[in-house]
Length: 574
Image 1 (cartoon, rainbow, N blue to C red):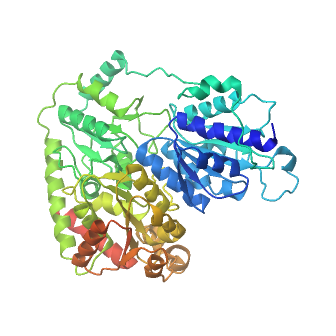
Image 2 (cartoon, rainbow, N blue to C red):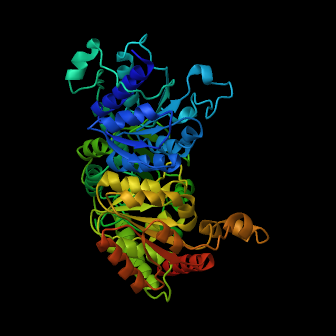
Image 3 (cartoon, rainbow, N blue to C red):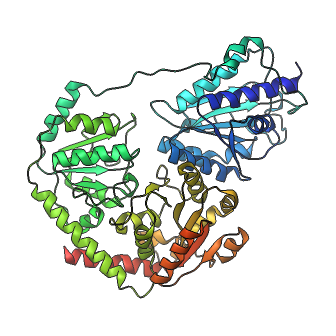
């Protein structure tokens, strides 16, 4: 068999076996060395593909897709810096425990470490951020092709296992990379070829919460007089419902992060939507905390935990890693949140009238009125008001993607809980501002529905070329860009007192707007100055079914003044 034939055969086997493992969405960047894999995707009728010229943005697109679907997807790039550009998204996927299958093309051994063009050391280039690494040898008839299939099966299993995350397969190829022949599946794989299943199947024993463990937990819960259920990122609607059911049974308050799915569009009586703002003025001590799901956006929450030092802090996550920056967790349970809540709800008794919950409910309702009144009287459209207006007018069941830094904090603090229920996405693994547009685009494709992205100016500038993805995206993206001419979050930090070098080194003003960028990438554009104008522009964008960029021009000092003024009113009201 000619070299090009065996090379293409191996590439075809890789793509086909990925599809049989339910990995059918392939994100590719153009490149020569990865040509066999690209051809394999192009010729497989079951493969869906997305192509983008920038590997960094491509990887974040894949990450957003996986975040929405919770299914693994594959990334294909050529060698050298193309592979290196994947690192930020791989880090985020590792931290968020999202299954990415990274396939990087590479030079053969004889071209490594000899100064060959477009060649770097790609061995374990992503370090400990991947769950599995394998350096696939150059295709050869001396190695049985079943080796390719079992390697793919292992990679997908490791990516989707107990500790989900990215895996990396480094694929060496010799020239010629593409030939006239496509390679014939050998007789030894005919049975596999005629089946529709992977070559190697993996079965895992489902971990159950033991009766003794649940009884012990119920006993600990019964000893808590003033308990709080704090909720981070959840897997979906079933987990959300299980948390609400447990809260009703215990009659405990829920402190929901905006990524939990319980913060917006959820009027449940146990949900304290403005807990972050309550902690500004009311730090009544809880003696027990039940933390379900991921990390919270609110820094005040972690300050509160360190201050009150609850006697019992029970944390439930579906993986074995530590998630305890305050070092206060007294019991760590590895289980699915839904399983935990269902099992515990059957063992605990119905909670009595809870004065702690009642007072929190009153404060929550009062803060909602204060926020609505304060932002409603603003003469200009502030970033806080824009974030709240988005949550009031976004359609039900659509997607809301929140950029890191100020946007997610503004919506977490001031989002209107009376709006519609939406699916919230955010890159809160490493919490960087890179790749946000690409992630939101992938999130929209994965959801199969329109998405609103709230993003800051620096994050948008950082990922500007990912706007090119929107031209052919099957789902429109409405981008609400909060442009305060620099890094607005630094104005809230102690470093803002560093007058001499603050603007140059932290504020980093750029003096740019995004009107020309919208024109360049063929996006609808609006720059409303008043709240009513913003609502009209946002509703028009939602009904146009095409991607739109709505730019909110603000001032960093005004942004700080609005937040501090609102916080003062809240504290006075409580």
